[in-house]
Length: 398
Image (cartoon, rainbow, N blue to C red; front, side, top):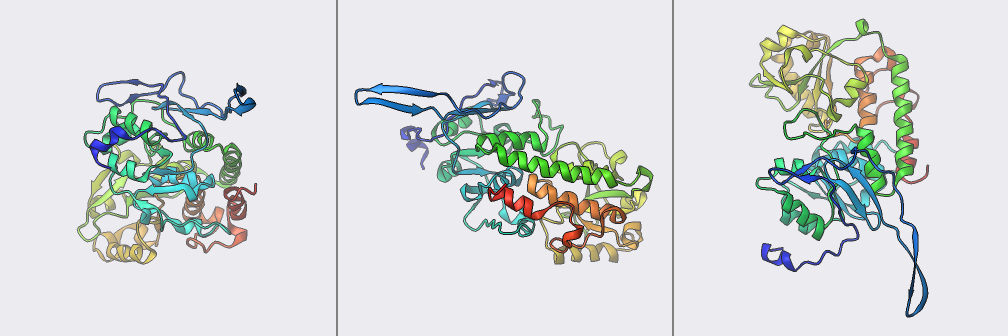
């Protein structure tokens, strides 16, 4: 749609938006009204409209949810079509049984669909979902979604010259925004409330009018957390683990390394009380090291972030071979003891988090949780959560 045509578009969406946050410099949102806590889903009271045609009862089905930075977001009815950027919120929508309405997501090839394939009867395909390589108004108008599951302030960081005016225009003429950048904490531009994975998930569930599915998922998550906590080895018995990006330059010997961070990106590692080998050696969110610096720290194990989402098993092994063949890399304890693991995606929602928590538990502590055999290769009696139960929740058979 051409820029000049947008002024003629009427706001015909079922979902509409009310922002409670005040505008600040740069035109983005500064938190939400009140205490920023999510409101419970509540339908309006039924009302009676006695028009000329006689008595007619019209039920008010509008409801609202609240999330920083948008404030209150109101809906006439549950959104049917939606898009997201990072698969964190995409995974939430899929968990809530809304996969059919997903119209756009960033780089579907990096979503670990192998996890969904382990859920009996659940069919998740991105064949008809647009790959959003860039977010601009043209794309949002073209996809024409009832709901945009992303943080509009992060959109202002991601897209040059994006402003509050652009956000309000799209919200009015297409559909509202709902989301909070929960991936990590500490970004300079994010000066409002953060949410945990399940705090954000509950609000999204209310937006889709699916509180029962949320409660069911929260129960599965709580059961997994209880299982993990009951069998975690004592701190002194846990290996030190170095977190490295699988997208590093193995040939050139340049590695992106991370501490175990606050935020949703490393949730499973914090839940497993991982001993991050690099935590005390990095000032900030990441560092870039060579083989020699890795050997100076020399963790018991190396975990390669994005190894389960951005590369195939064959590509991963090829990179590990490069590491093993390097004269310095080959000296690493993790190499010599064959403790090189495919790590999870940092863009995890509730489904992906269940699988990635199980994978990490088995990789780090095989004596406590059983051997990690790879995606789809864990025998039923060694699984840490019930796949059928998760599939039933997604399918609405709770």
